Length: 112
Length: 111
Image (cartoon, rainbow over all chains, first blue to last red; front, side):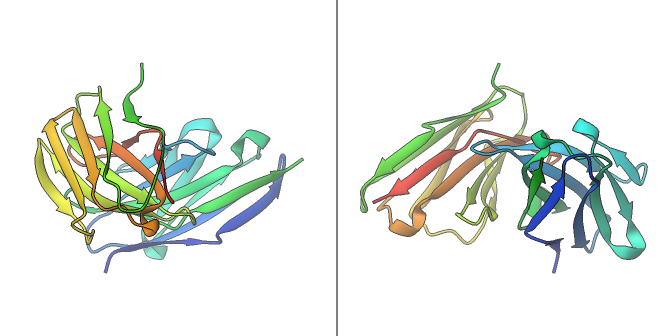
């Protein structure tokens, strides 16, 4: 069955430190992968997407993610965390047709 | 100009009531969705319409009925509300199943 697993429901980093949010997927078709961010009391917004072009994908706000087929992973990184990055992050995979499956989310805390 | 809008933003109601949530998108997309986000932030697809045709209908109680009068609108009607229906409901849209644009959400509280 197709699925998305986000390792760690909570991640805490210091301001200026590396952000690494982990995502593994399983898909029976070539995957379209996404990261979305949700700020408190708001809807989700797209951070970046992988659609079978370059394996290293750059998104908004300095985030990037690397698609690794051999590891079935699509981890999200940012070199230097900012206080404004504190939010909930969702990894998602399009499983065919119009259906997208979302991971359980990772809450990112940024300490001053 | 808001891309995906939902009304109302907050909805507080009693058990057993019937309520509706409206969604509109001005992006010209052909596909719209309803998601339910529970208190643990888990996001679950409920329905999806493509060009006004129902294409995704997950395991949702039949008290929930979506309606798409045109490609720009997707409404959600809920009959006989229960405590477990309390959640945040998100509308989203996309073009041909690509990445989705989400609305701001409707926080439903059933007392």
